[in-house]
Structure formats: structure tokens, C-alpha cells
Image 1 (tube, rainbow, N blue to C red):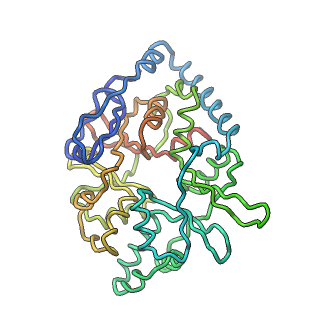
Image 2 (cartoon, helix red, strand yellow):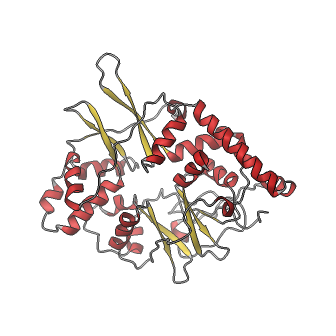
Image 3 (cartoon, rainbow, N blue to C red):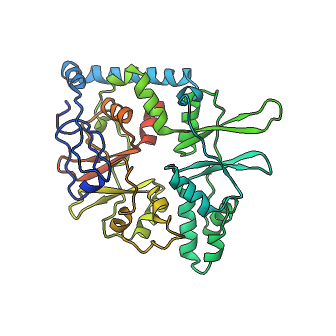
Length: 367
């Protein structure tokens, strides 16, 4: 049975030194510049359901809910998820990397589709990984500042070759294909987002329609599938996420070490813990963008704590859960708040694992 004191807790940046697991339910995140108290939401519905059901019934309901959500994903296409109006920024591959970085930051976005006007074709996605690759290249070739400063987006493949990383597969999907198919493609390619590419009927030129993210899909599911309310099996029974060999850093860890962890572990974030392994913050791949905005890589000698001071005010917070929690509560939190992962903690705030949106999506599709 789920206890009252272990739901999901975002920490604001100001709270990062004093991380307490919430004693009530799923507060909304406080912004990093705010010291206001988080609002609390109550999940009495979940509590009532849990107290009336046997563990066997909960497991059966869980399987019924998963099948219903899969059917829902088969019945919808990617267009269904898009808002009525939205803005899309697409970069020409001849654009300077440093100019693209400024545009991303000015528009509070972390990725954008690339367009090759010579071939009139979609040319992949620009993400924080590309900037991390450039940082790595510059760290290995500090005499190449001129090259790095004049680097254009179509030169990113050369950077990948020079540092010996495999290029990410250029995955895309037609917007009328089913959401289920889009989810499978994302999981298979380890992508957190997938561009929607259409074709002009007359000219047969590709058209970049939008980019679909795992967060948007899971939010769409939580808003439209009432069956999420019966996903009541505790996380400890589901075996999702990572609970062993977790990489973590301290506030005093050099930020370059954190960046190296992001690459070597193939993760999108590194949890920051204190000397007792209690979670106090997180360093995300997207934090690299604000780190290097002041010019190419002047701040790579900073500690993680110093680097986090550069984080923008719209940071969504750090979300935690415990092994007694369930996907009903997590999806409800995704519906209300913007988050990309949850760190699993014990009652005293000690870090024990991480669950990403990929883990949740994979479980829903194949669990």
C-alpha cells in the first residue's frame, strides 16, 4: 500500500542545498528564482483504490490499462498530439554553430530540426549532444579555436569523426503514421524526440512539420486515457529505470567531468548528491547550452555548483519518487508539470535510482 509521504517532489534551485522529500503529494515546481512554497495536490482517489484492491487485482488492472493505452496509441497519429498553433524553428545547415546556440537560448528551446537547402531535405536534429561533441573536440584540440569559432552546422559530422563518436541515426516519421509507431521508432533509436516529416505532393520536397517529444506523448496519454488511473502497481514490482551502477557527482566536481559522464554513460543527466549520497540537484545535458553561451567554452574549468548558477530561471526542478509509488501518480505529475526524469530516493532523500521518460514509454509499449 502506498504511504502518504512518498510522492513526487520538485526542488527549486534555491532549495538545492536542503532537499527534503515531500511529506504530501506531488507539488508543482517552484522556479529557480522563487522561494515560494510548492503547492500540494492530493491523490485521495489513488489511496481509496489501493485500499480496496488485492495485489492480484492491481496486477490484472495494470495489464488491462497497458493494453488500453497501447490501443489508444495505435488509434492516434502524431498530428493529434500537436497543439492547434505552434512555432517551429528550423536551422539551415550553413548556419554557424554559435549563432544556432544563441537562437536556441533566446527562444528557450533545446533542439531544432536541420534543413539542407542544397538537397531540399531534412538533415537531422540539432541537440545538446552536438554541443557536447564540440566541447569535447575543443578540449582535445585547444589550438583549434578558430575552427571551432567558425564551425557551421554541416561541419558537426566532421567533429563527430574527429572525436570518434558514431553519428546519431537520422530518424523521422510521417505525421499520419500512428503514435505507437512513432514511440517504437524513438525507443529503437534511443531518441528522446522524433521529427515529423511530410512531403509536398507536387514538388516531392520534404516538409518539416514539427518535432514530437516523449514528454508530449506521455502528457497526451495522461490527459486522454482514463486507464492511467488504474496503473497502481508499485514501481518496485515493475523493474523499470536504473537502480544499479548509477553515476553521480558532487557540487565541487569539475563540470568537464560531468560532461564526460553524460557521454560515457549515454545519459541525459547526472544527479548531484552530497557526502551522504542525498540528492540535492541534477546536471542535465541541456545545461551545457547555458554554460557555453558566453563564448566558446570559456567556463569549462568551473565546478558543477558554479555551472548551475548559470542555469536559467525556467528550470523545471528536480523530481523524485520512491519505489512504493506507481505510474498513476507519475503520469498525473507529467500531466501537470514539465519533467524529463524522476530520481528514485529513499525516505531520507538518499539516491537509489532514476526513471526516465524513455523507461516509462518502453514499459507502456512492451512492459
